[in-house]
Length: 138
Image (cartoon, rainbow, N blue to C red; front, top):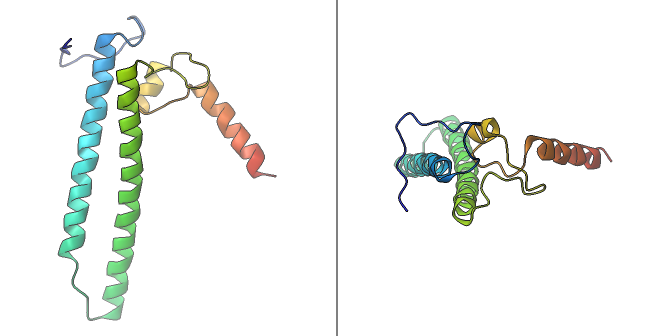
């Protein structure tokens, strides 16, 4: 079944949670985000290849290596984010998207708008962070 979104569609608390239109909205949003990250990564790789020559000056070489290291860390973060986007797309397919992994309650729409890869409700996330802080302080 193909779902067509109105160009100005925004999910609302007034409609059934994760109905087909809402799922399609988040699916398209995740796909656009993923495509942007992949495009950025291609640009990063191209940039790294273009600057592959060794600099004669040691200060210039150090600067280039620092820039390269930063770009590679950024690329690694993007790679992990793409994996989370892929997981969210899979949850849309299997019908579990938008529901908290711990409580199975719906995740607030404003949270999903801000973080479409969210897997926990705000309450569950806060509990999770408190537990991490407690164990980290030991």
